[in-house]
Length: 335
View 1 (spheres, rainbow, N blue to C red):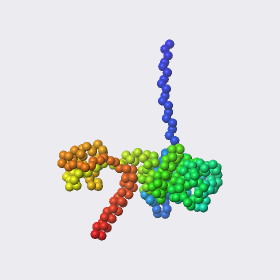
View 2: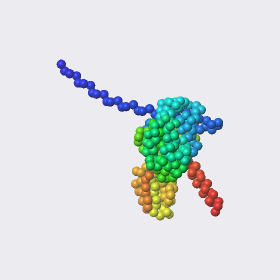
View 3: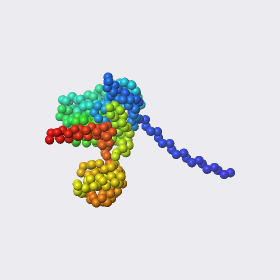
View 4: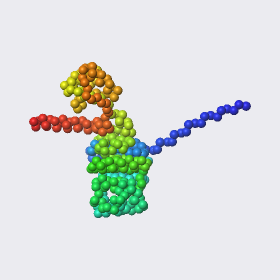
């Protein structure tokens, strides 16, 4: 009797995606007539560094405080690690936070300050030595905090936030006031913490200070959500362009006319012209210039960076342009 062939093995099921580290639904917070958060709905994935960015006064700090249970929403809901923010005790031991500038006893050493905090949080003394090593303060732990630079104090604040060995680390403006070297130190530390499997949420009004370490971005302005998603999705909104620089400045108008005849709207860019098109258009721009008898000294293709996209989304580029125009008018009047 013939034997029926065995059915093919079913493909293994993909493991379920981990639940989001935090969610908000129509989250709103009002202070009198001021709306700090305007019906904010978002969901953040676990793992990596999440950048919460927006201009000053955009509601970032209000959102952070609300997620930590420091303020209550006017309406809407939010959950952290699967627990509603109405019951922050349920997730308190799994979340570490640094809000604004860390406060320590200046006369005590870094180690003594952390030991005091560890005692209050019922954390073992061995954890103090671990976090000092993690943030790069091992060897400096016996120095009084008053001798610490601002960058070292920020690292000590992050060490304090790490004492409970949290799954979620929330840092509000951790690079605020740091010099370039301090910003680099904190960025490297954030990357290491994320590599350990934690989720790090870091707020900043300067995207340039954190963009290199972020895997996910949340952009807010005046309490409204403008974007939430992977960094690559935001980069996809960047404008591509081709810049053409004539050898002789007197050829600029002839070059503009040649590009317009070819169907491009060229705008001034430095000493040359910019065509908003992909890099594949560079050869055609070169041919149009050559056909018009214009020799190019420079031809380059590029794309906006994240900061330019961020400024455009938040309207800061328009504010900057208006400020520059105003300054130019003042200089003209002064002449």
